[in-house]
Image (cartoon, rainbow, N blue to C red; front, side, top):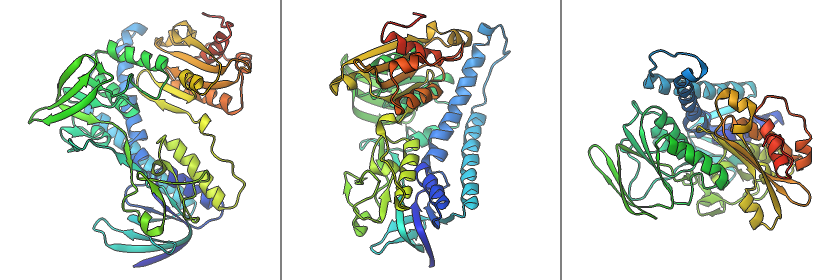
Length: 466
């Protein structure tokens, strides 16, 4: 059995693990990464990146279908679905290979296999058959093993009729019909993708509106857009049973309209994730766990002082960029640097469907529930010159402010390039911007970002173009 010594062992090479490993190497640590799969984890291989590549194909196809609106002709428009999937996988592979290059550049050693904690600061590395292949001993350990899709106990994933998100991104052909349980980011993005290529879509959501964590005003815009594209959406709906047939899946549900019987060729279950905490040897090492999630302090240190944990292993919000920020914070703390806790109030998030949705900070309802007196400003893309030139008028910016001080509490965007626009709002909130500082910042014209300036003005009745 191979024996390896290091300053830091990182278990997992997703956005939390690989970024932390590189930062630790920059700080002079000898770093070993234990990874059982391709470098990059779920995000690069089976999540963020390949899904966005699929959605880019859908975006281009949708734009080509609108060519006539721009005085253009696209001829006999068609698509090669297998090539769309191939491009997505190629993009993921390229980025995974890029991490290998970065590891080599930073002299980070990779040990293939599944890492498991032991009592004495060691990590046992096991192959797929459970055989011990290596042992790594280090001063510190960072657990960044991620999570996997949560299934339904009465209808487990089979890769054929009942799909996980990973299954859904490598289908050979688009199904004639797809039923999606869960209207969070994953469900909404796959609904958008498959609808673009002709699949009949039905979405079932337990909570009152799609994208339940978003501001209801923002979610309503996406809901209307999906309905316009002839997607069936059932909210406040509980799935009671699932029957798998030879050619279809039938879902039985209870909605405000009564009992529902919904059939589709395939079913995508997107109801959350489960942390990959089993098999890590947490109990053996004395690491405290609560409901499967590792308990940590604000520096991501576990109940064992030399062991840290980041990313999906410690709970929501299940965002790649959050895991990366946590990983950097953790290794800087290990190195003895002066580190501030992560500001969770300035973490952006985005949904990459059409229209895109993005947010940072509090929704209007959340701000009110926390006792703030609020003012909210809105500006529709229909009144924005750049949106009109792009033919993308479905959307809006909504900003939430504290009424007395004018401090920005939250920003919410739906529409074209929302995922890029949210960066300005995030920076503004991070630096304590007020409605007036945003309003008085001159924005280039014509740009979608002018909608941010106008929304801040609208909160105080000072918007110009509405």
